[in-house]
Image (cartoon, rainbow, N blue to C red; front, side):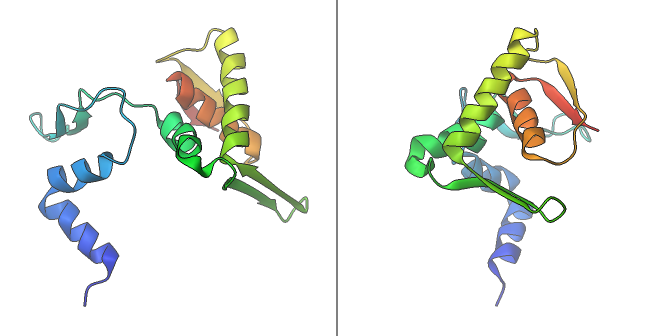
Length: 141
């Protein structure tokens, strides 16, 4: 008997439009897509053409809106510094929004590029999500 992963993988290969369209319904879209998979310029495929969403909203705010604000969203566990620091969805959303505001005050906006030069600490995740909240592209160094 096939395991759930193999079943889902098979469905995604056999019917990518149906499979990924159904999965995408779980996300919040500001504008619903016109087409799930646009293969009109092979091999330059485009997914969810015409659609607009915000990955930060889907990663944080949506979970808070659905009542999961007090649940852990991120757990920073550093054996080097002996640090264990949990972040709930609400706390992480608030810290990301605060940093997004700081970036916006510096003129960062949709389509801008931001380099994040930090070790893998919670603040790096906050910076990446803040960029996503603003629609800025980030690159981690």
